[in-house]
Image (cartoon, rainbow, N blue to C red; front, side, top):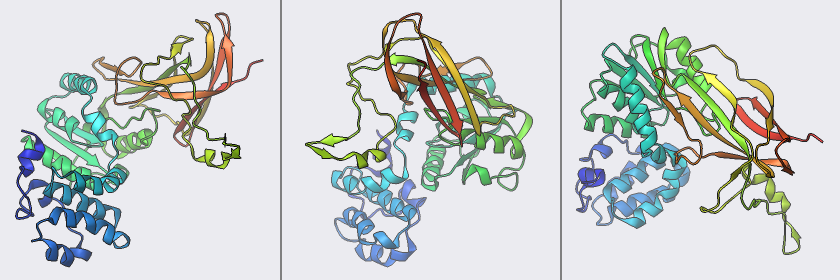
Amino acid sequence: MTKAEKFFGKADMSDRWGQDPLLEHTELPASIAPFIAALRRKPNFALEVANLINWFDNKLSPEEKLNLALHARGLAPYDPHVWRLTKSVVNASIPHWHFAIATDQNRNEIYDKAINACINDDSVVLEIGTGSGILALMAARAGARHVYTIEINPVIARAAKINIAANGYADRITVIAANAMTVGIGDIIPQRCNVLLHEIISNDLFGEDMTKLIGHARKHLLTEDALHLPDRMWATGRVVEYPKPKSQAIGTQMGFDLSAMDLAQSPQLFTKSATDIEKPLTDAVEIMHVVSNADSSYAADIADFHIPVTTAGRANAFQQWIGFSFPDGTIYSNEPPQPSCWDNVIHPFVYPRDVTPGNSICIRRTVQNMVMSIQDIRTD
């Protein structure tokens, strides 16, 4: 039985408003409560709720729109039209990668292995980034005395709270719906935690304010000897000949200059078919790392790497991936061809060139304001 079937069943939900766990934890927008009450007994109640989002678009906050969208879906979990009507609202508030991460079996198994090796009944765990609640649940199952888990998105926090209760760990896991940068020791977290658990790592390493959040936790929420899971994160990559490089730039089409639109395109400019495979031209090189439990500043940093060519080809991109390790020695990496919820990042070259063994490619890695970029440097 799926969770939707368990929570909602397949019957019409119009007479069960407020009886379902998800709906009980979701607040109705007070500004349009009378309209909801008036529509409640209509046979197509779920559809009417979904339509309210468009009818009152200017009167509702993003969170209120999301609450209505989830209400509608909860009332009609098998109605594709309700789901289509609410798609844009849900997608705008809940990033799609939450689902890719929670269903990545390799990632889950590696975290579970490290958590079981590092956490015991003396562990008081702080997690940053609750998501579905899966890592907090792993920590509680491994024996942690208590887990305090912080989630900035209030709707995701509510869903995680339901998941945690459904699995029997509500007494040992506290979900805090807040920006982790604003959380301190107080009524909710009564003492400093001796374990930091997180997965606030983007596919270009810094994209989720990882170092800022870890720094705040170390200063305000953790003991000095706290265990960090993971404790080291890095970015690695290699020069490649990327297959059938195709720019997404519009440029000139049908004799018209349309290049003004190109300022809005993605910086990852190469596309390939599912069957194409990039050709490595160099060995892999670590270009950046972050040690979680050490004082470091990554606000502005530039480094050049001269990478020897090992295979002849057309050097037109740098293929970059991430990895991280845990105190017990467990390592995760999405080095290709490992399938992963994190994509490899393709950094296209400004100066594509033919290379042979004996040549080297100069790569400049820049970090500024917690954004990392990689470019090739002309070395004529």
